[in-house]
Length: 276
Image (tube, rainbow, N blue to C red; front, side, top):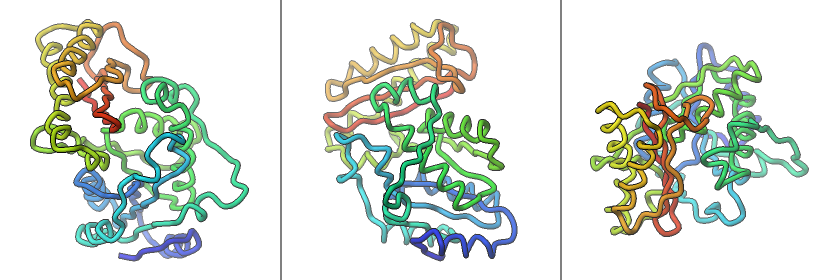
């Protein structure tokens, strides 16, 4: 596996490739969820590359940019073991040189759900992903379904800007107790870790109700809220039943509707979702 830190090195590598390239953009501190994306990329392309970049523009001033978990050597070892072909791990100054002033915004999809709590987040996400797409020129790019709004936003951006890139959404990878894998799980205390699977239980409770014939979206939202309330260490941020493409709140939940949650465990904020 080659490791490069500059765009010039990356473009030299890319220029010598023949055949499709699969890209997995990440912020590092890799877990099995990330590695599942690498496996998909390797299975569908002769070449697979990963970027590790903790993107400062998607963090608000009061968020966890400085404390976000990092362990580059561990990430390198994991990627080598999986057979990844290239790792791009640039410093912030390489991605955002002095005087940088261009931003990418997917206007409407950035506003609901995560956008209410983090209004500048998705502008940072869209900008860095668009930069990575321009630098790598991948055939396919792989993103996890756990960040459902991010996935919808990147698909919209690719369609709107006519990008010749296939956006591949991959299933959520969970711990044995149902907790969706996330780098931020490392912040949880033992007691918080024991409480955190309530997010998944809330989604399962709503899905069970839906399978039993309940199609009222408000009933499903109420079930998710009530399930979260059974865990005193967990404070609900939102529970939604939304259209998976527009993220508009639904009154009636059809097949394919998105159930999504965000919740706080002290200062740690976790998200989860499920498609009916």
